[in-house]
Length: 356
Ligand code: COI
Image 1 (tube, rainbow, N blue to C red):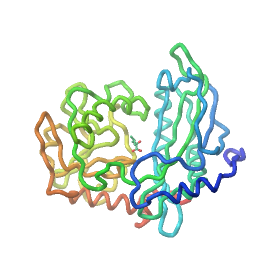
Image 2: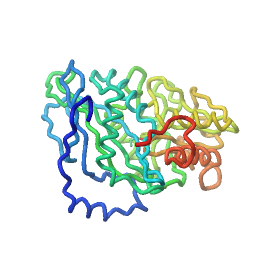
Image 3: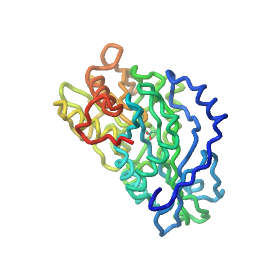
């Protein structure tokens, strides 16, 4: 139970869901939505605190057409993953980091948010209730998607009178169709993802709608995704639509510093610590597009993308490639170190793993 409140669970309709599970090709999971058994729902009124949540059968939710999230984008999301370890146990990676980031975002978006403890407990309940959807070891993970939204009705622009915290899950494999093969990015020079003083540094839903146009255009031209530049100087790297970016030059790994326009990725933060522990020099600073074009290796990090090597960058019509084809040495080393930790294959010296 959560805060002394019993969790209600309706009984699963085993016959239909069992056949859905049987149909899954675990060796070829991509990053598509798949519905599972349960979702977690917790509500509270404006000015109050979240206190009572419950697991419900996964399904559509009812919202007023006038809900704050639908009309004015008052919403945040999170993303984290549960892995199945070889001994059958379930592992979560730094869930309290997602909880803290949601709280920071909620403050920016004028929303109440669950406590770190409520968030982590709710994640655990949701994962355990959907345990059979966690891919077998080495085949992928269960992606956990917490949402926080203004669910109450508003008409004039104002914070919504009611809020809903919801968690659903879906089994996933590779985010990019390339898998671990290097992706091809194009630097966007007209549109920007975020501006100083805006909401680029929090995981609000509108940040992701804002990149769809540039992303779609890039995909139509055969690129994997878009790399954004800062909106003031138009020369410093920001991030890719769904992930952070790193460049490697010799023993130095650099990534744009967090300054309000860049999403503070938990994989970003973890990769910095892993790289430092492996003897690399890591710099969080302004990184220019020229440095990007002259780097030895480039890679992206994110919960969904994990560590994705970049094979080429196109900037103002000029294409630069990195290495031979295949993942670069440093990207491979960091990818292996992080994923071995997340899957429970190496000792967790960082204290990042929560075993359920
Ligand atoms: C994640 O990496 O978990 C994200 O939230 C990015 C999303 C666009 C898939």
